[in-house]
Structure formats: C-alpha cells, structure tokens
Length: 116
Length: 116
Image (cartoon, rainbow over all chains, first blue to last red; front, side, top):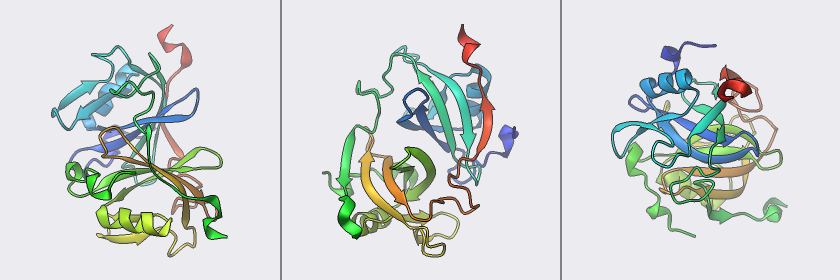
C-alpha cells in the first residue's frame, strides 16, 4: 500500500479524479474529485468523501440524501493521478438526478461494422 | 445528441476527464483527458484522441503502440463535465506499462463485514 502523500495531486491543482463503480453489478456510477484531505477521510472512514468544486468544500457523499457509498476497494493508476473506487451504493442511487448512474445519457453510438 | 460545445470544459481549464471501458469485458482500462478539439477528432474518427497534459499536445491513442481504441459508445454525465467511453481495445493493452488496465494496483481493500 502506498502513502497517500505519494498520490500526485499536482496535475489538477490539488485534485485527483475518482471513478466510482458499483462493486455488485460492475456499473460505473459517477466521477468525483478528491483532494488529499478527502482521500484521507475516505481511507479512514471507508466511505467516500469528495472535494466539491462548485461549493469549494469537503463533501461526504450521502450526507443529505442518505445514499452513502461503502467502499470495498480503492485502486490507483500507472501515473498515480487517478483513482478507481469500488463501492456498495446505499439506496441504489448515486446521481443527484435520481438516476442510478450519472452517465445516463448517450452522446454518440458507433456501429460495430464501422471498420469492416 | 448534444452539441460538443455544450460539454462543460470550463471546470478544468478546457479539459474533461474521460473514463475508458473495454466494451467486451466491461473492465475500466484508463482515464484520459480531452479538450474540445480532441473530443471533436474522437467523434469524427471513432477512435480516441486525448489531450496529453505532460506533453501539452493532442494525442491519438495507439499512434506509437498500434493499440488504438475503436469506439462503440460515448456517454456523458449529469453535469456534462465527464465522459464515459466504451471501446474495443486493439492489441488488448491500454496501459503504457504493458498492463491491460492502468488500474493494476490496489491502494486499499476494505472487508465486507466492516459495517455489520
């Protein structure tokens, strides 16, 4: 296990992106941002804490909605500047819109035969 | 389908994070960043183009390695400031380290019984 201080927060002015996946159904629920303090709180509590860029404050996911995220595993990438967090989503809904996942809309679909 | 100009690139000084998933095995391969120009090239070509933060240039994934990413679907999130891209990974390897996924290391695992 690496030291939290070795995570590279410099590339995004103190933040790293965190991909959040439902551990049971392997579905991508959301992408949040963490600073060093929120990552420490996440590791200590076993629940996700993010840095809210709009509110400029630490944000314990689920504080308002009750839909907290109980962590199963945290992975980090080759450059140590992105996180992948597997969670159990309490309440089943991660998105503030009421959708299970924040990625509920399609920008573009490409046909399989495109390259044939 | 939304207009690319409606994607919110402002929150990260012209960039949005793009989560990249292997469409066949539903495995998260990497996280890259796109600016508006790289997203346009991605949509036009059906292959991923990123903005390299270290080299400060557009980067067509696979140009060097041959491991291009053929896109099946692009989704966007509730705030229109993150993308989820399902791809077919040519060569089977997304990470420059030779690993299939960039997220090949674990930071911490939490026990299932933690909250019981």
